[in-house]
Image (cartoon, rainbow, N blue to C red):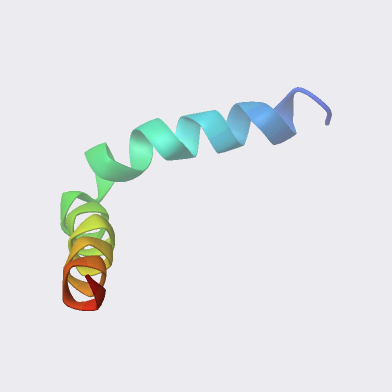
Amino acid sequence: MAPVGPSLGELFAGGFPTLRPTGHRDKPGKTQVSRSSSA
């Protein structure tokens, strides 16, 4: 279970954008827009 915890997190981080390019782009895009607006 110990190796599965960190392993799953690492895999998810690298597989998230590959599996869901739309969601990954929405996340960073929204953050950048919010930051730009604040600045």
